[in-house]
Each structure stands twice: as structure tokens, then as C-alpha cells.
Length: 385
Image 1 (tube, one colour):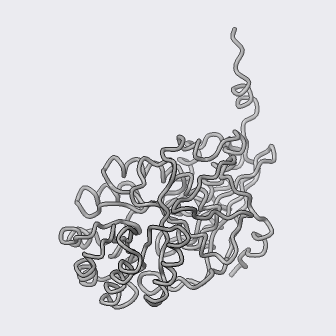
Image 2 (tube, rainbow, N blue to C red; image 1 turned 180 degrees about the vertical axis):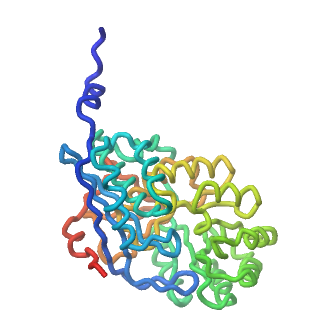
Image 3 (cartoon, rainbow, N blue to C red; image 1 turned 45 degrees about the vertical axis):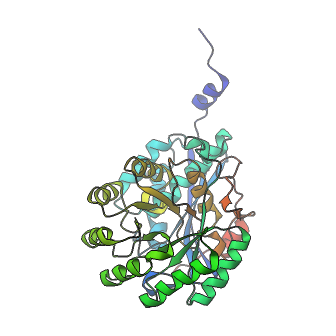
């Protein structure tokens, strides 16, 4: 009888059993306040860090930002979900069963996609380290040699946006997202043209309202900014206003992108079938992790939708690394990838991910390929309310 390969024997004899899971809430100050659609102002990033430890001592790390207005997840709620529901579900299980564990997480409780994502990313990091391969290999291998780096502009006035955009263009960025739904719509239209004039025709521009516009404001914006060459307008209306998005899509010269409304594959299919969107913003925190995000990207590609990958503002390089691995492996990435660790005053890894020549390099080390700074974790651990 033929002897099994050593690798197969290893996997059978030493399953990667999970023995401990820690839910670590963090609150990290931003370099500067970020103004979002609807007038929300953020000065700190609140995230859940999940630490998964196997019986052999290996550790995997995952991250998900609190996003009450997007996923409904508060920081306290995410900690409770991991400690009460997900840790008991995962401890004693074989981490190599990534698909099975993702399914169990998905069905354990309704919603709570943020803490599910943090657990799923940590499991991928752990398995990648065990097998000695990057997370991109676990997701099917690279589909491209670079990713289009997108950066957002979210200052209170156009002069600051212009100054930041020029500095970032010199640093290598060629794709900018302008936060709208904040100021009077006439000012935001003028801002789009000012940025186009300052940055030149070769730079890509898009806009994101984070549900901050009325239907009338959205119609006025897309008509007024039509000649600014916007690649897309993201989530101008409320997440449950499908009729409004469809009516806007029918008259808009600017393609529409779903974000807050793209909370499930079923929702994306419904919006695409009705003609309400041309593309979709995919976040791990909305889809419950890398497994769910990859499935969403595959379906979106099959539907002919453009895809943008994004972190919520202020995710550290733990979450950013997961998104970059995903970005290199999804079927299409027409609308780029938006990492937001650059807005943190201090990152949670020893060598933060950085843009280079308009792209983000895919970490080559095993797992996520980043080394967590546990000292920073302790410094920024959030106090209980």
C-alpha cells in the first residue's frame, strides 16, 4: 500500500485545534478628524481585534471596525458576540476547516457581521501561518500583479481637500474618493470641478455620500458634476431606498455604487436586476469575513458589476492586510481598493501597509504577513463603558 505524503500525514495527525479566543476592543485616535456623509465627524477609530490561539501555540489575528450605521455593530456588542457565541462555537474545532467554520459563524446569530469577520480573518491568518502560505493562496491565488489604490478626501473645506490631494498625488496616488453629502450641494459640485482642474484628466475621481443626500440633492449633484468625470457616486441615498436609487440611476450620467445597501448577496442581486447600481463596495465587516466577501465578489463579477473593496475609516493594518489579500484574488477590481490605516495616529502592526506607486503590495509572509504590535494593543485597549 502506497505511503501517504508527509504533508497529508501531518494534517491528519495534527489538526489545527483552537484552544483560546480573545476579543480585544481598541480605540485609536485619528491623525485628523474625518467628516463623513450626513455630517458625522470621527476623531477615533473603534475596532475589535480577535486573537485565535491553537493548541500548538500558533496565533492568528483578525480585525473588524465598529460600524453602528453600516452593520449595526457597536464595539461593546462585538466583544459580547465573540465571548458569548463565537468563542464557544470555535474552541476545540479544527481551524483548517475554514469553509465549515465560516458557515457556522454565519448561522450562529443574526447579523453581527463585524465580529464574524474578525474571527474569520483571524482563522485565515492562523491557517496561513500553519501551512506557511499567505492568505492570498488560501483564497485561490493572485489574479493580478497590482491593485488600484484609492484614497479618500474628507476635509471640511475644498482648500484642505486640494492640498491633501496634491500631496497624495505626489506620493503616488492616482485615485481619489471625495466625501459628499456634507456641505451644500452647490459647494460639492464646485469641489469636484476644482479637484479635477487641480489634479488633471488622468486622475480618477469618485464620490461617496454615505447615505447623506436627499433624492433632490443627489439628482442635482449628478447632473451638476457630470462633466467632472466621476467614475461613480457611492450610496447617495438611504440603504433601504431601492426605489430612490432606481429612479436616480435612470437619470444619472454618473454610475451608482452600493455600499450600506449592499449588506448581502441577495440585496446586491436585487439591486442589479432592477438596474439600480453599476457597481458595489464590498467590505469584510458587511459580509462576515473573507469567505463571505470572496463569494460576494464572485457573484458581483458574474452579474457584470464593478467592484470596489474598502475598509471602514481607521482600520489598522491587520484589517488592511486582509483586504489587500482579497484584492489580489477577487475576479475583478474595476473600482480599486481603499485602505484607511493611513488615518490612524498609531497602527497596530510593526510595519504598517503603505501605498507605493498607486498600489498596495500583497504581503508575502505566511498568513496576513503582518506582525502585530502587542504593546500598541495594550496602549489602545478600550475601557469598558
